[in-house]
Length: 250
Length: 216
Image (cartoon, rainbow over all chains, first blue to last red; front, side, top):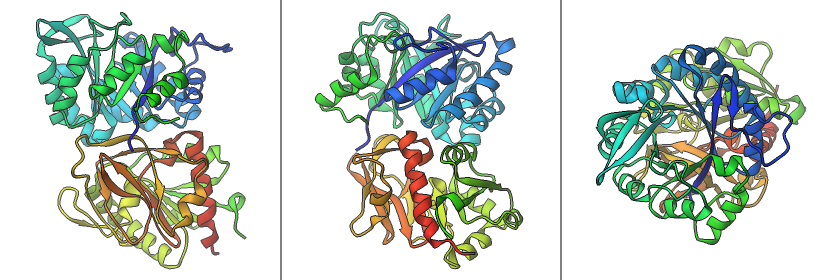
């Protein structure tokens, strides 16, 4: 039986992880490879890295840390942040990333999704969709959530899937940072309509929130601070999920 | 004569797939390996086992195997009884044919047709799943590191059944062959090299087991 995935997310700036793990004593809590290895050993099913370095410096540092992470771990990882051409995407996969995550550039030029899927296969192309509630609908935001667009979140998810995305990473900006739970309504709507896996992101504060996302159709859950600060350990979360009937890898 | 320490795994590079993470796994296992960019690279050092990785679509990958001369080399290698292991698309290429984007013949070293996973709501089948050893085939059971071990899968096409099935996996009630083996030729639909330290160890055991078919 296919298990539901738990995915810690790490932000990288200038080759260093910001808000690094602080639940274990690490010699270097900002080193991407050390943190990746720690999470792999904690039972993470995959990892996601988001490079938030300013674009003019990003490329150089990204090429270095992605290779080092690939050398350190033997579970799949996704890299996102400023990828705007199939060349960027192919370069990151060649360094060892399993998947790349597209966001702003794909909204601006949706064919990018198809181009990356042709070059790497759909399985390597994640489309990250940042949404904010707008009445009953969800509006798509870009540029790290700073810029609103005219796009409807649900429509964009369907379009991204039809253009060749292999997976959707759906972040609710209303819920992000609240620790009050995911936007399960929207997750259920998208998950029931697209024929590709959907990752829940934004708002998880407890294992129960993750359970709710899975019960509403999410295939994986992305979490950041609750893991980084040691509020929940991955193993404990997975035990809770298994006790509640969710298939997980232990 | 045989044994892990003596193995030199030739990693076939035919232009479809990312060799890096397979090579990283072999490095972790301390298994000697050499990237093979063309069949000519097999002269020295002579590999003892060939590993065929691969990601992407079946038809261009098969076309590439033909145009680079790898098709003939792999068929010859296998027919001499030498060890050959395919991973993911590499496993599918060893099979009879694929229905991905039309019908394309494979290498025909393992019996089985590759079809789109039908009846599955979400494709690709992506994530960790179990591989249940098939009846009468010890290959998987002997390599598995711990009971209930999960492996990382990411694919949209699969072999639904084969006389050479070594393990079966189920997704949303749809069963497919997650491992195939016919004597010296084996394949995994999952990625042992991305299945954590236990997956890497599993790969090492599989290579060691196949090495009993090693010959000079």
